[in-house]
Length: 190
Image (cartoon, rainbow, N blue to C red):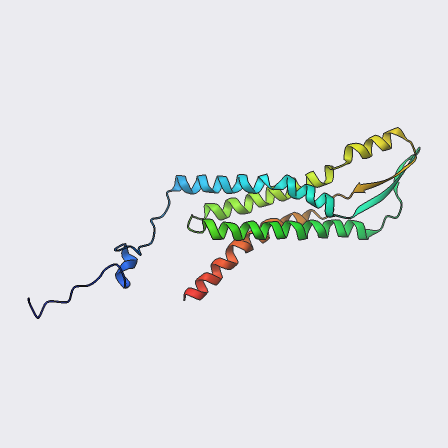
């Protein structure tokens, strides 16, 4: 035994473990193709949620009271509260859904590349437009049939989304749901 030889080192722990030696080495980066496949699956999953969110918004949003007469249809009390409440409920609902999706993506897919974040943002924006359209169309056929019949009636009609800017709530919340935990994790690590 040579007394001048350096001692044997365990390379599975310590600073050398970060260079790919030992069981604590970081996992290899995914390939570009697998990045794109995961991004497409994220986009598809987000878009699948658009119609149910639109239906839920239609059920939760305030409805306007409409009177149908022989001359046509009109609001009984055209108050701005119904319209503002409808937009506000859309923003609140889509922000909750977007934030939850963003956080779920961060928890499960944070090791994948930036394609996941881009897909999350673009699909969330598209899903927001789809949800607004689906929520507006619920009950539209019955309403049009009642107006076309000309028979006097009182109906509740869905209020459409007036502030198209409200559609950015979902993608912004999704990005915040992904990026805030990421930033917090990096701050905690340093």
